[in-house]
Image (cartoon, rainbow, N blue to C red):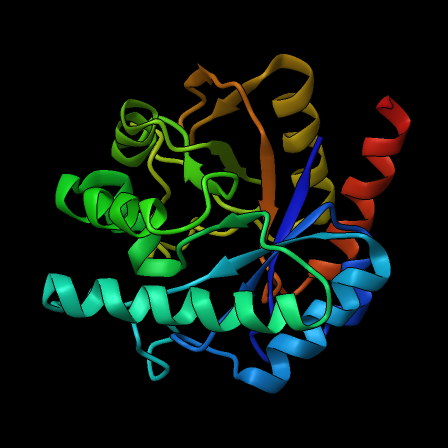
Length: 237
């Protein structure tokens, strides 16, 4: 059971959350973060033995990378490579290596459903080292294409987000997009792990081979959720 979280986004709780994680996705300048925050987050991850990943996005700090932007393909590809490369260089300077890449926000959601965006992300991955994983949503276009292209992937589910009946994420603008109650989130994750399935808002279920479970660092109860999941993980191990 791998627990991951998006960090380095200026929320201010990274130090508290890091001890409960197995892997983290570090903002690398597109939607949040700079060289200083990247180094600080990397050092925290190194201290706690947490695997590190790049969390690139559309270059859009105003909307925290959560707005779909129309960017020319080659420019977007260059922007993503620059974000990943900067984090990779800082990591290398302190003796660390990237474990994975996880697109952020609108980029992640677009790659889940758009073949063109999925192909672009895969092209970015093909320019990186072969042993870097790509975190992908289950039942998605990018999962299918990544498998076809021989990209190493980790299939991700979300602990604190609701799923539509087609098992896409409920839009953040919907009132039921985010699950607030830490105990409810813990129960959901227990079901995910014990039954290897995900349940939609209308109680449909889908079997999923889960590799990693995400919580969001900007969730109001992020630290409590991380601890609950950490404790559950150690109960079943």
